[in-house]
Image (tube, rainbow, N blue to C red; front, side, top):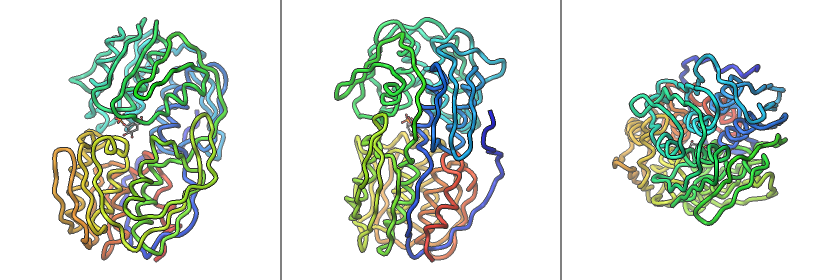
Length: 437
Ligand code: S3P
């Protein structure tokens, strides 16, 4: 496998204020969908080919894992990748499987490997090693999986074996946990049902169907019959809405902006940000809507209002917007009425404690902000100043504060800017192409 080079060089980026954002962009492939296509094609029989595969380091970790287990992964250039799967049986690798910074890789792989013969150890970087893994171990153990954690965390060892389907209600909304169960259920005896009180992103359900598996869905559950086999597909990965969020939020800050994003993933379980920006006063048009393997793709055009209003994000909305909350918090001081975020405790166990870092960095830029265990209150009508931002090595913090910097007085420097490459290596270059100064 000839993977892109993600050699880590610690970098600092300076962001200068902008007048507006203008232009058209096509964003790299969705990180969540790329993980699922990468992992399932690794298990399937035959050769799958994907265009616009995510350029982020995280989906590349998923590809490296399936490659280490016997799949053949080839980068074909121009963000195209082909994966020849193992036809249902992975071969255990001699060395641990490195999931890098990617919680998705580790949790989904745990499900994928639980029914496979052999012993598999999953490791990650320092941030991933701090993240909770009991949430996947426990339900998988109910299916009969033998998984060992280290004090609730990685390294995680799977001793694969026969599994039996279960009926499981997820205690916290998590698409990664749902996916781990569906991937295990695909290979189990009997049927596995996952019930959710909040509908999390459904890329796994759509991807499993794309690869030929049968699933049944109700309004709040999904069931998969066991012992199904997958067959290869050719697919184009839609542009990543969570990456687009930084551009959409940035454009919304300036009345003169005119931003067009082509080929963007518009799966309804991922597009809640468009509703929130509309509630804040932005005018959003969706054009050229198409569907591939159940995933909606279209063009989004954003025209901002004279000034943004205010809003509260809580309950189910908080779960659905979890990856976009740092970007929303970063534009909150510049709104008229502020943004209130609650029921988002999960933010504390992402790649960093995102509530803590958002609060610290907003304060570093001179903002008034109140911190809660499960969110924050950012009053509106505030003017921020440039500052030194500590990204904590978290890609979404680095990008969110680059957005806040565009409307601040003076320059902002983002420490640990290289972390953007986890999901979106092109972020800073693309920002420069649309930021007008
Ligand atoms: C993801 C699910 C979410 C999200 C993460 C990607 C996925 O995590 O925050 O960035 O691709 O399934 P949780 O499952 O922990 O909520």
